[in-house]
Length: 221
Image (cartoon, rainbow, N blue to C red; front, side, top):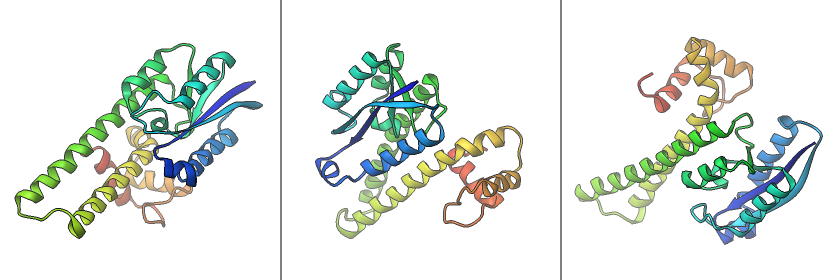
């Protein structure tokens, strides 16, 4: 029988008290268990930390890992960044043969793929941070007074772009393999529509929308 230890993490005490973030994580975990897990399965423990992903010395995580090792279960989390935002920490767990990891949002990913994803995610965060700082510096040099409404607008625009990047990365898990297999943009759009995948603003996919996703993630495509 497959055995799981569930682990969730939110980054602030406010999130922990209100449940913000936890509901979404548990929803994704439930989707994995209902649609991708072998059956029967057993949940041998559930743990929640209310701490930053940069802090790897989390009491609930350590307890979860101890239970994983003693029960020979898999550590199941909604997303890889709930485990840690540091690729070095994730790599250390991947190399630990007594720890099995399972990410609900990437149900078929093995340890090698998780390592690559963690490294790419860390690079993306570093790039986004550098891009934001560069944009603020450029605005400052143009004489723009940072803060207030303009600062809020800039931050909102950055957040919108970040969200679009994340959505494109998710879609590439479907679009990428199809494109590499030689499918046309129109064919990929039809596949997305037939499988009930919603376009960014709802409605049906078109070849142009598929092209925009490819350009966002792989500009040279």
